[in-house]
Length: 266
Image (cartoon, rainbow, N blue to C red; front, side, top):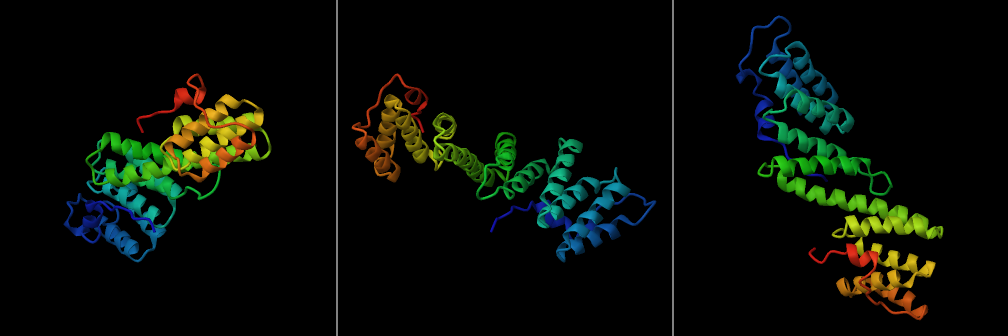
């Protein structure tokens, strides 16, 4: 179950509409609309609540309540798992209120909306990359906000998912003996995602693919790096066995691609 951080302003707004300053009305009483929306939200009628909050913005676009109503509408869509609608309204919020009080939260909720749409398995990196973009924005622009710690965690998970998606494509090509295409995917993981949970497999499959092509220096170097950094890895045991069957051993050569890109400061 995902833990979603709710900003204090949202908690204060719900049920407290009558405490807010109100302009003169020409249409429906703003407090009536707001309290109706808050009641619907509490009753988990999320789409109806979102529509009511948006009514405030439509009917009173220049009121003191318009900004908060837009955030509340977005939150209602989010709670109702209408993530695309939430993203649309939150994006509009960031455009209308570039210095708004809820800008950090808007970015956080956009990131969460993308993050919760990430499939457990699949090659589509769209949602993971957009979630990563928003979590990075929070860490860069709002490093001391209430959302930074969770954004940092979700950022790492999004990166891991992206690496996993690349690995899946690499495995697809390797299984079909399209080794050059597979190597290119494993290269991407090795060069861009060395701190993810997929790095051991990437090193092993990179070595295995070069071994299949008869290019032994890259195969041996990758295996040597894997063994040095992850000596107890099952993937190292696997590739060590494959090299042994070919009459080879892990051996690091400095003038190889993998040696040049491998970082020692992780």
